[in-house]
Image 1 (cartoon, rainbow, N blue to C red):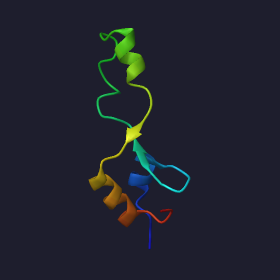
Image 2 (tube, rainbow, N blue to C red):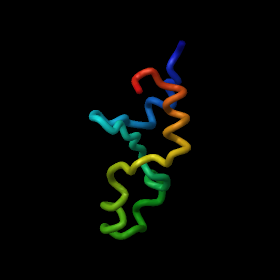
Image 3 (cartoon, rainbow, N blue to C red):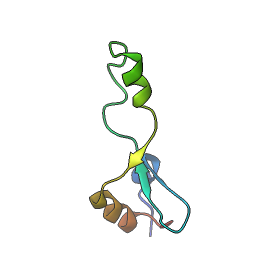
Image 4 (spheres, rainbow, N blue to C red):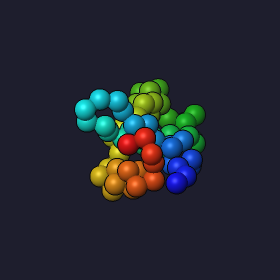
Length: 64
């Protein structure tokens, strides 16, 4: 069974007892020059994926 490479490039699975799926929030790539520095800095990082995406990722990846 093949892993869906497009999905594995967009998510990160944490290590530990509770394996959380982390993703980048939308709206981080474009139109950043006109925003304030505080908004730009807040766009960095990842957030926990919603439950629907967790179920989908479990079905499409091997490393879960």
